Image 1 (cartoon, helix red, strand yellow):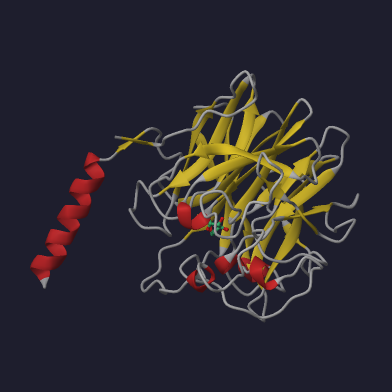
Image 2 (cartoon, rainbow, N blue to C red):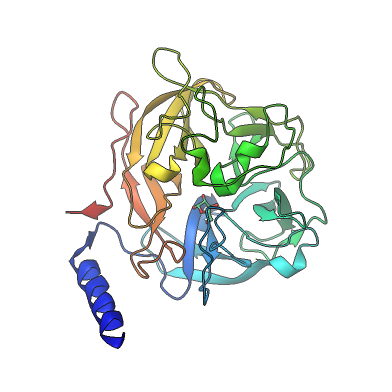
Length: 349
Ligand code: FUB
């Protein structure tokens, strides 16, 4: 038995030492994932999930091994500068409605206040999205006592438009539970994983991420969430079984001139892809791949312009080799003259 363990470890070490990674982890003291990057007060702040080691990680399709319990914010004065790991920004124990699984968060700033948006499962094990407020970008954040009314599923990201409106994009299928919510925002209990691959959802338009405009208070929705349509260049919806292009999780929006770029993860096919629109509500037209599969199962990102340069923040599993123990990184990202984005390969063969 000892021999088998030794050989397995040796094999993993050899494989990993042979892999060449384009970028290096931002920090190695803690495991971090799902980086949402912003510039606040002239500094770069990254809001990641804080992955934790589990003695016996559950094996299920509901994402049980992503059992995170707090958030830690990272910051850099400039790209490539030293990274500060700030103290705990929000602890699961301090959120009255949240029972478990602090998944991918995001943050926004308005009028000198900072808002952290985070998903967690409630006492019924249903994902909802919470808001927490701070005077400082790194927190600590004071959570609202209840989740955002009308919110559901996970992976919130909040986009500020040029006219000062804020929109939350959210949702994710499988363990993210989006398949349990219809487009009128009605919940029905349901399955959460691989069963959805072939028989779980009828073939037809894929499940859409959701959008809701934020109220002025930034802690509530100004409207009922609506589906965000993703279509191909002929105007046809991207279909459920189109696993390389359909939405899975990790919606994120950036804007260049009048074009909105919606990027997202395709989950089980592991790409970060993008689609464009002239309207924050869509429909978005599928364009292509931003990030090819990274090391590890999940692929989750954000985009940020620093000076004149765009960056893709993402994670992989370079340090641990385990899907649920990730490390955040960044890479330069380039738009072509026609507005398309050059595909990034984070593993160099
Ligand atoms: O980190 C937990 C979940 O894994 C995120 O919410 C998903 O986007 C995936 O990265």
